[in-house]
Each structure stands twice: as C-alpha cells, then as structure tokens.
Image 1 (cartoon, rainbow, N blue to C red):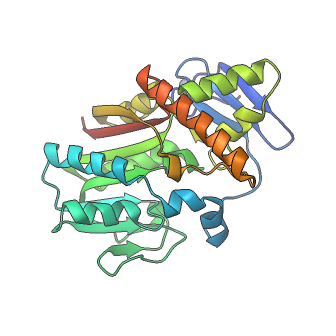
Image 2: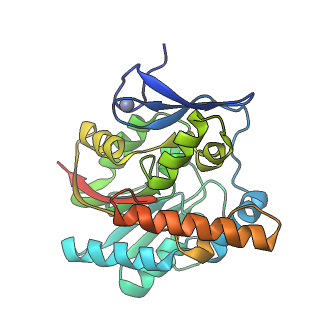
Image 3: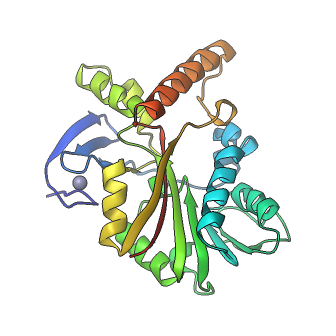
Length: 274
Ligand SMILES: [Zn+2]
C-alpha cells in the first residue's frame, strides 16, 4: 500500500493518471506526489538548461535579495551552502550582499560558475567533504527530489550549525493555479494538471506538508511567505510567441491573485533547529 511520503496517510485523491504517471494528492496534508513514476531519470545537462532557458537566464534575483535580507536580519552568517546550485545564481547574488561570507555550492550536473565559490560537482547525499554551515538553501530543489525526503533533512540537520537556518523555496500544491488545475482534471481535462505537476517534480509540497516535513525532522519554521515567479523567469515551453505571452500572462495573473488570497505560487520558508 502506498502512503504519503510526508504524513504517511493512505488516503489519496487522484489528480490525474496517464500511461506514464499517476499523480495523487494526500487528503490529509495536501502533499502531491507521483506514485507511478516515469522511468525517465532527470539528467542535469545542457538539454536541461535549454528546457529551462528563462529560469537560468533570468533567475528571480528579487526573491533572492528578499531571502538574503531576511537571513541577515536573523543571524550574521559566515558560511552558506546552496544545494542543487545549478549555475550558482543564488550564491552570486548572496556575494553582493554579504561580501565576506564563504559560499559553497553543490550540484551534480554543472561545473563551478565562479572561482570565488567553493564547489562540489557531486550528489549532496554521498558527498563526504562538507562541513557545518550557518545557512543551507534549497531553491527549487525539493520538488525534484526522487529519493527519501526524510534522509535529506537528516543530513541537512547534521551539516547545520546550532543557530543555523535552512531556506526552502518550492512550488505550492495548494496554490490557486494548482487548485484550478486539479479541479479541471476532475472535470475531465487533465492537461493543465499535467503541466503544473510536471514529470520533473515527483513531489509538490503544500504549505501544510512542508511545515510537517520540517517539524517531524527537528526543525521549527520561523518565517514563511509566498512569492510569484517573475514574468521573465517563467518557461512555458511553447514555440509560439503569442501563445507564450498569453499563457505567461494567465499564469502571472493567477499567481498574483493566489498570493493576495494566501494561496501563492511559490512557498518560501526559513526554519531553524527546534
Ligand atoms: Zn500527507
């Protein structure tokens, strides 16, 4: 019997099912997960960069700056470890605000983007060289994670200083857009849900499941807020410029409306050891 990877409930509601995937939402904590995964394993290569062209070319620097401001109001960090760093855009932005901080990135797929960074081109879970850090960030990372989620947080806990902060930014399963796509799927049109809960994201946290996951692994949430992904950052994967514009405008409108009513597109959380 499959159970929810966060709250272990066995009660799910189907979001959609096709030949490759079955995606369900936990009735209890609203976590969305893929229980019949595609055999395709995500490879972080040049093709992945092209597929997420806008995300990598126009990283959400405003959100990054807001995170860094919030972090520095809570602690005076000397070290920051960014997991799934990609091209290091968050670290590069952090350097501008905190010039003397030691910045470390971990990414399986890409080489160090700057000699100014300490860099591990490896998998965080099997990397043995890592130290203790004041901040560990996971920006658009947890939703891609295919392995044991609790084991990931246990390792993060071990590498975090006592007053250190974990920062998570991830799409929200309870966002207005997610909820509309789930309702449409129940009415018989599952394409929006297949795009929202994409093949790359076996997990989509709700505000409730993200809080629960942190809590059960020894963290307390100290700040939580919602964000809308900026216009330029979004990839719609549509060839037609007009269609891209229309879909992007629709996503933008629903994201902003969702943020205003407390169902934001992205969840941002800062937590500390409990
Ligand atoms: Zn659950």
